[in-house]
Amino acid sequence: MDERSDNELMLLLRGESREALGTLFARHHRSVYALCYRMTGDTAVADDLAQESFLRLLRYKENFDGRSLFTTWLYRVVRNLCLDHLSRRKRERRMQERLSLETEDGDVDGAPDDRVELLERALYALDPDKREVIVLSRFQGLNYREIAQVLECSVGAVKTRAHRALRELRATFQKLEQEA
Image 1 (cartoon, one colour):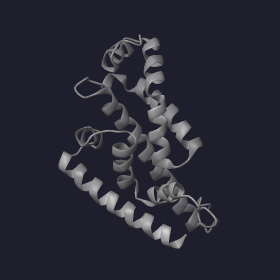
Image 2: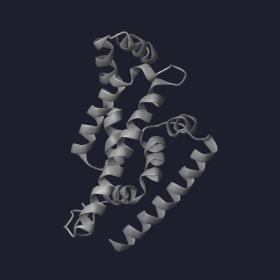
Image 3: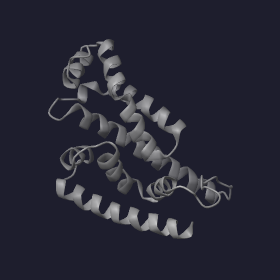
Image 4: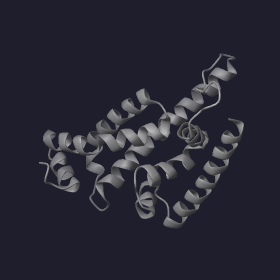
């Protein structure tokens, strides 16, 4: 099974081949987990979302038509799942605030001593739509055309989003660095 393309494996999966699912999982779990982690910033949540991503792949296998790359389709599934999670989490926080319950926001106590930690904090400070463009381009290695397919927008829109997101990331990073 390993020598077959992802698109061929999806065709086999549509024909109920569980071995094809196993091969796709082995090939893509690491990058799916990385995308989930970078979108949420939480290892446990990322693990759950990565698992759910492959369940959705199985559930929606008939929707894969092969016109785009498998990874583009998969990242769209993962992106939607992560955005759903982030929306739910945001609603839950608002509800807790309305009920005057204390919430844990995950802020790091004290000044970070590592620029990588500062960069992570700056990345998670971005809105999810800005963060996803950076994650898809810089961490997942997708080009702007592939990102446009995942986000279902034009390449120009992706370039604009990426430029604005990087500018905001840079400003947030510099602010955090000055505070440290």
